[in-house]
Image 1 (cartoon, rainbow, N blue to C red):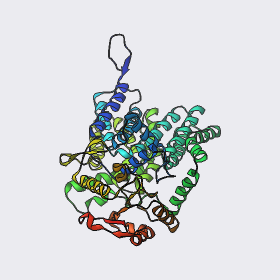
Image 2 (image 1 turned 90 degrees about the vertical axis):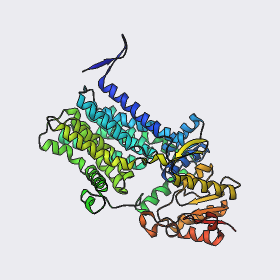
Image 3 (image 1 turned 60 degrees about the horizontal axis):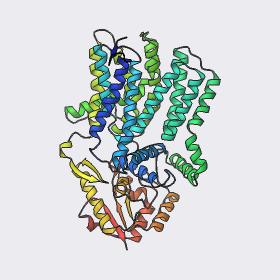
Image 4 (image 1 turned 45 degrees about the vertical axis):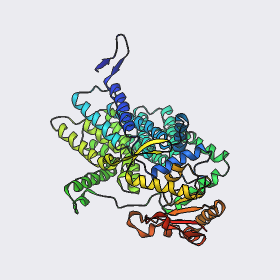
Length: 516
């Protein structure tokens, strides 16, 4: 193996170690360069509000609608360390996990192999592509979970000892504290991987190790269990959140899954190319689970390590395809893509003969083209510099107008920390103003039942906000998803007890109500 020596009589670094360090450094550099640009008051605001709320002593899920708690406590720690409750520390919190994810993926691809010129090209391409797909800061936690699960499962498959099964369980339980869906995906993916390995590699797993895995899951999930036990009101709120998901039958608003053959229904050549590659990726993440079997069926010779990485990637591509399919847009594709991305990049790395260049270029283009549409828009020349929460950001003129409206409402109507409401999906507005939402549901797009709305109306009565901004947005072009339909009782309460003051908004596309 080739080694590079940095200084006289110092430790050698192998090429794969250099590549992993490069993955960390290059991905971090790209993230840092992009950190001051853009602001999303919807999804990013959802994370930002939660981190600020934790600093105030609030508890996710109990005191405001939230994902599982890890991401909020992790982000609030960065706020504390950097001395700011703005959005920049939240982005750094995500950046650390995103860079680690890129490096873990590079480790899976390379192992301890030496790098030829072509392998360097593929590794650098992977680093750039993996980083570009992660530039939705607020979703970096979910991507980290998927990569960590693949990495952990691979290490179990290489040496399926009792200790590694136990530690794999700890990891699966731990990612469930980040998101219970990731815990479920972790269990499903790990089961698929062990069954597939038993079938393809003739490695039989004992029941004792399965039991150790289960014990590890409980231990990894223990922070959540302690919260359920020790924090007053948390168990009831957690149970309500689970029952709500079961009742609604979904965690997302579904969209049709794009397929490659849908690309040619109209539009220009660039649009068709983008739709074609996106359709291929949606198709690929669902079918990749069959790749290890296909390789064995056609007797394609690969090293054992490569086969085991592919099994780990394939095993998690299936459950994470569910994540992508739950709302089949580019953002959710990026969340379910990484097991497939690592696996397909590894396949390209191991193509031999004259065709490897063509295969590599095709795979690079397949992954690169859609990422252009998934990341921060490239028209940052139009962005304007603003100060938000003491931080210098460059944002689009559209978001600047939203910030100006939010600040105008605050100046005219607010005198306390929870006397303005923004519904249904501007949690970032509270964060900009350092306000507390007067209601529990800071992000509400799914229809709610009467019992839920009674609780929200009770909070409106209790906190008596002076101003309420309502955005009756037709999500996905569906009028039935406007707030007045999904939260009918709450909307009727607002109409009855507040005065219509939309003239204050100067014809902006919102409804605005003030106390009578």
